[in-house]
Image (tube, rainbow, N blue to C red; front, top):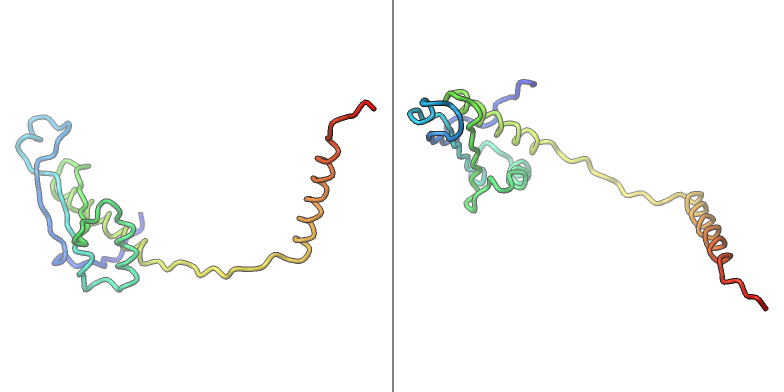
Length: 137
């Protein structure tokens, strides 16, 4: 994976550690390795308005009503690796949100394409009109 430039300073991230469920033997019952990271996207000074809007839309169900993005990381068995995983996932979301959408210019169909469409319609109409009931008069 390409190295991402850190956009979010550590001071804006809040971490909570807790015991993770799932496999891990006795270690899982003793050590708080799971990480819940909170990032206040709504009030972050390190995001511009465009990135903030897109990031909040992209966050989906991870966004609270207060504009805080909550990311939970339980993939790894160490606290430090889960912490790093949560930071990487947030940075990827920010990087995707920062990419500006290409402006699409609407175009009109060409004259030839209009003519082709109308010719195809009339051909199809002729085929269908030839399927009428046969009269035995």
